[in-house]
Image: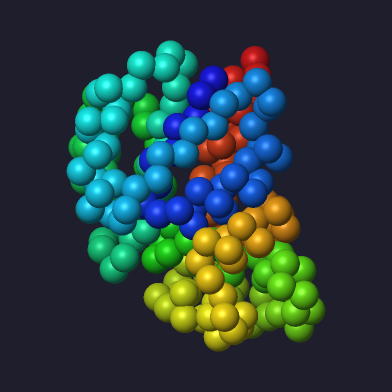
Length: 184
């Protein structure tokens, strides 16, 4: 099976690539189609889905919410995927940084800042999907944090069971389901 991720930006690719081998079997191939922002992603979805020639492929579209109504956004993205209705559409509620803040222990380990681990008990980090300013919070907690490098650094430390982001857990659940179906 080939998993084809259609992504809004490079940081998401580095984040996913950092832990994908822990989810999908070795015989899977994983392709990351990285775009230059949400408009580029949305414009290319129908064309890339229509032109994709690799058999046994499953598309997974991941796009940040960016202040939009998530239901309207998801429906719009699904409409763009009409030629492949089995395409998974996942919205990190707000930004990728919400998924990273969902596992404060991973953040603490990745950046050698042990004090961050205890912060997962703080009220505002118990449900990172509610953080409208996840990027700013992450920059405050890890001064000098860079999106691509940070995603690459944190990803290997992400614990799927420990992560508190509901939207991240939905993606992981979908990927595990696909992995189980493809392994059978």
